[in-house]
Image (cartoon, rainbow, N blue to C red; front, side, top):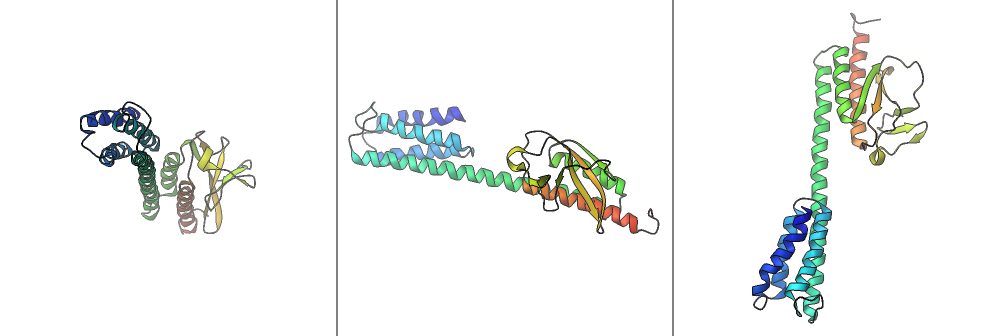
Length: 241
């Protein structure tokens, strides 16, 4: 796509050279805008920006007097070139935002599917062991973990934990997971149910993988489903205790 961002506008400008005496500069610019839009459809802002810059330079060099020069004689051509550049940059920004929104929507759908899978197990009467096993697998994928272990209690306190609001705290300080991912130390995801602390998922993060606040909130919801399953077993007449 980077190659297309450079070659595309130049090739189209060269193709317009035989008609430059018959077409208005604005018409040439509109054709080049189509090229920029085609490059921007990839959703990559950098490629669209490059295409806009190259298109403006190609318009100047091939399609304005004096030809084969980066000087412009007519004020109207200068205005057209500036507008071409502005429109190209705007299209690139809009395309990048659209791609980002599509990616975010896809991630939200995947996160809901993960939560639904664990909720379905918990609601359909599977044993807490089965729910814990499924939740651990889903948490590994959701939070990009190297390992995920469930324990009933902690032999030693874990300094880093995920709060009920989906915030990672190291001690009392929040950790910027959206920028640098989870801390490299073990992270505690508490499991609560029926007002009790019933266990912990001990998470071993994969370094350098950014984790969004939404993913952390889904992880908390998964832990809550495990807690609900454990609490139901505790309160069952045939359950432990």
